[in-house]
Image 1 (spheres, rainbow, N blue to C red):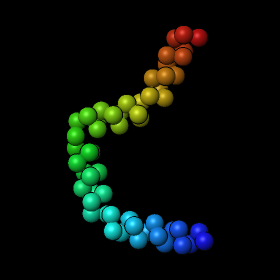
Image 2 (cartoon, one colour):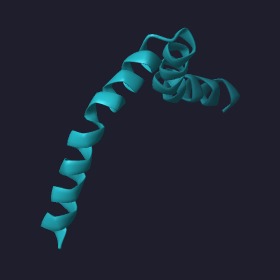
Image 3 (cartoon, rainbow, N blue to C red):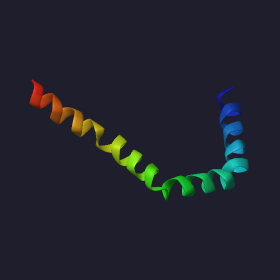
Image 4 (cartoon, rainbow, N blue to C red):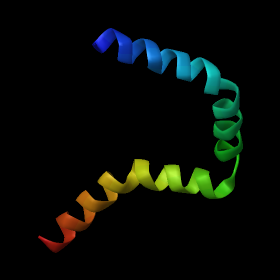
Length: 55
C-alpha cells in the first residue's frame, strides 16, 4: 500500500514539476515572499530573546 502511495506521489510530482518550478521561482524572487521566509526563519530567535527580556 505504501509503495502505491509513493509511486502515485512521484508520478504527480513529474506531472506538476514544471508548473511547480515556475511558481516557486516566481515566489522566491518576490520581495514579500523573501521577507516572509526571513521572518519564519528568524522567529524562534526573536521569540527566545523576548522571553529572556520578560522573564
